Amino acid sequence: MAAMIGHHDAEKAFLEPWTSGRLHHAWLLAGPQGMGKGAFAARVARFLVTHDRAGEGGAPLSLDDPGDDQAGRLVAAGNHPEIIHLTRQVKDKSKDLARNITIDQVRGMIRRLHLSLSLGAWRVVVIDAVDDLETDGANALLKTLEEPPAQTLFLLVSHSPGRLLPTIRSRCRILRFQPVERDVMTAWLHDLRPMLDMAEVRAIVAASGGVPGKALALIDSDVAVMEKKLMAIATGGDRDNRLREALAREVGGTSNRARLELVIDIVPGLLARLARERPLGEIAPVLGQWDRIQRTVRDAVRGSYDGAMVGFEIGNCLAELAPRGGQAAR
Image 1: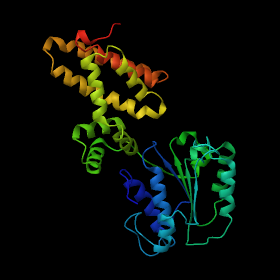
Image 2 (image 1 turned 180 degrees about the horizontal axis):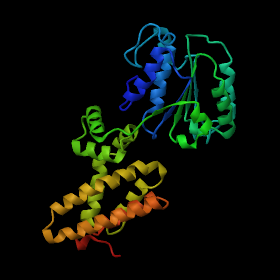
Image 3 (image 1 turned 90 degrees about the vertical axis):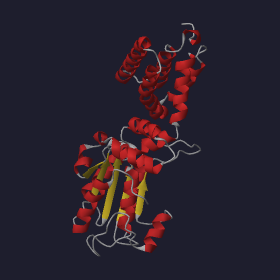
Image 4 (image 1 turned 180 degrees about the vertical axis):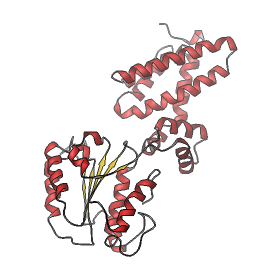
């Protein structure tokens, strides 16, 4: 299992107490969604169940140290008996996920904690995300954290740690996963996807906000295609609103938030290109539309953040820059 970018400090913070034999029983993995916290938890779980008790056998080089081969094969197959994973379940007769991790799931986990270890020296509980626990489930978890079973490690993944019970947070050691610096992200993404040109890489990195998972999702949105669509509005005017309506659909809704942010990040470069290609006397309208777009985005952030509305208004601003013959009647 390959390490994700931005995990070095968290890995070091975990391995040091493990090596010294002073491993805390509960860890809160906190940070924005898309930072790979769940992947980090999986690496820690695999590491613990494939290694001896804390401090024995010498210090490993990393969480990816292979350890016991038999245990490793069980982990790879998803069948290791000492890894307990709680997450939202798929609803009956539906592909949608349940709103919460239920109290019944937590009770089932607690029952398993009362059993003796059947393999290895550790049992690991991963709750991803602990933010999704029902209130009763959170209270039941708290009681378990207050009196943890021996040789049991809790890994609590949280995208919004402020939503958790303060008493749960206080019983955990916190590992914070911070957004990755732009130059580090750029190098990582370029190595990962060498087929992308640097302009695309920079646009994706800027729109990702330093979140690797978000950057990977944005690759699938195809930066070049989106830029071409925006340029078509700016040069052709979109007389029948068809392109603007399509843009609004593409960036509207919570699931398309990353695509909207990509559009917002592409626009400055696109306007700069238009300004360079126009006579000096025609640059002022370009700057005026950029100011208008910035106001639209600011107002949306302060309000309900209607992605479709923002997308359509950005399209309106770009259409204003088209030669007069291409603009729609307004």
